[in-house]
Length: 204
Length: 390
Image: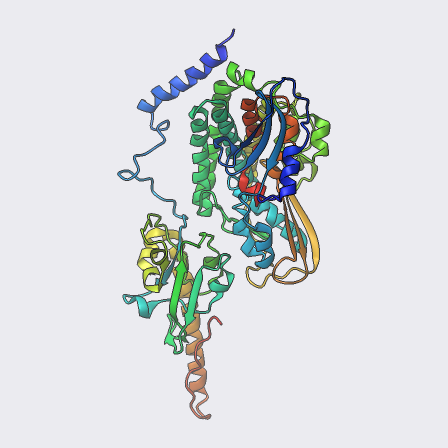
């Protein structure tokens, strides 16, 4: 019969229309600014720099090794290395970035900087409401704007952050054990002139 | 062909004699459909010569979305091209990732762990389902069913994209596969969520078919329109649902059996007439076959590592040589051809995009049909301009 297919289709539409009043399964949209769908735990938007402790500048994990700058596909990271060194989380003296800018108008959120970073310093944020009326300055984030605390990282990616913390703690314990062993060896070698414990080795 | 044509090229295009003889007495009307025509899925131009409503000549003009993908990749490290492949066919970023990873794995002779192969199959088939669903939605949109079928397709696509987001971190630009495996492992909860989505997909396919397959308007607009002969399809190296819609049994999942596709039972749907309706039907049936593959893959996924332990992210330098990796992407044969000279970046990087090559037979399919049918025939090719122009 002509029109049978159309009637069948209209019945499907009517079923869905009526169903949207009773079944949450069929009601698939939300009223955005008031209601929000929670972001997935793995979601990634733009990079952030992590710091430990209360002071963002002193606790910054980045050691300005510039690997992410080299590996970044669209080359949106700009780093300037410091002349002096400051101690990192295991106490080893390291360089730090005097300038660390990410141009998020160029960044394509690919996460390669996170994968190549050996210091767990750069991670991805989940904040996506970043509209600004300043096309150039407003989208070029400097290291202060990028710095986020480890607690913030725990709040956005809890599982991943716990793993990272465990990995860092393990590394730190290893370095400390090594330093202790070195100190003990130095103490045991009482006959030899006393030497200071060897500085811990970690990273390159 | 580039967006900026030379004068002689343009004249050749315009002044070419009509491919079929005009029947009427009036003058020919030459229309540039696009590059901003709403039906062109992006920026694409068709120079059409019309005799009344009949198309008697059609010249596709590509290149408006050219982004220099291949040249950028030749200047970048191998891994740095992976996120760029997401942006080729932005509906199916995971299959693009797979094709590129496959080419590089062939180049360096890397093995992929079994679990990673299963994850790749699951993600590729989910991609195929959401691509075919939205293609059909767009086709119906162009037919004048403004919105309803597309919304049904997008409702289902949304569930699949949510799975992608919770696994890879991004809904469309996944950047998930790596040379020798995958970036992160799937969790038990993710597999359960996927099983739940997959168990709902057959009902979606039934609903979609009830809504569309026997619809008289769809049948009247699609049957016998835009016929592509199997000989021409093979000669023009058309691939994917377009080729199978013309009745040629050629599916790279069956022919090459890359990955672990030899372990799954599935059929290859074939069309009979090569018209728009056959292409539509092949896509619907392929969705059903993909659901079968997904059910099998989700049942048998083995535990184990997801990365080849020999693979490294930094300092990746393959030995000199060349490789061509190809997969059955949702739109057709997607291939990456790489030549390495031993350096950190490829000496030559070439993409074989299914969208572009399927588009080359557009004129042959459109000749003699009305302008309104051109829009439909173009929609049934299933292209993404990001891949056509690269």
